[in-house]
Length: 213
Ligand code: GRF
Image 1 (cartoon, rainbow, N blue to C red):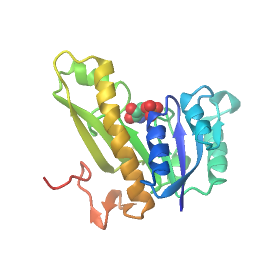
Image 2: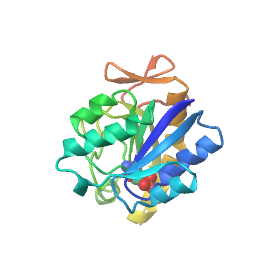
Image 3: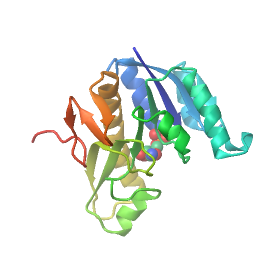
């Protein structure tokens, strides 16, 4: 069984989707631990509820980002992770952290990357009058929200949508695609090589995997 560690900062609904998929054996791996950079993150409760070790490391305990990430790496590595999953982890990673977990570090970003890297994606979609929106699972590299795309899910934007409505629509897709990508990885089907994502030995295009129509 492959070991999975998840990093969160907040609600942890994506974490919950991964916990559920592990329990339902849709992911053939073990969720060893959850780490948060916010002590009051609700996701830590979700982890405890599922009897998964839940840890908080907060910025005020450390003198620098490097020191924070060094300790985080030590604590994560105690669980011998095959895969580290960022699920709403709202903290910039140091280059040392990214290179330490290169090829086994995933993120989910709430936009159709390369559109809207960074924050407030849902608001920007509404302000720009976009007709479609979505979410992206990608490998993490040093480029913020810029690593190789693995899978995207699109949602429509309807006239009069509020930010809350499109957030919920996007998140419903996230809860489907993130566990799926994690399952691909733990089954050894998914890799990062030459700064590209590969699934079943096939190099994925810039927008990630697309099923045949
Ligand atoms: C998700 O929408 C994800 O795309 C973004 O942060 C949000 C986290 O939500 N990175 P949750 O904590 O998993 O509910």
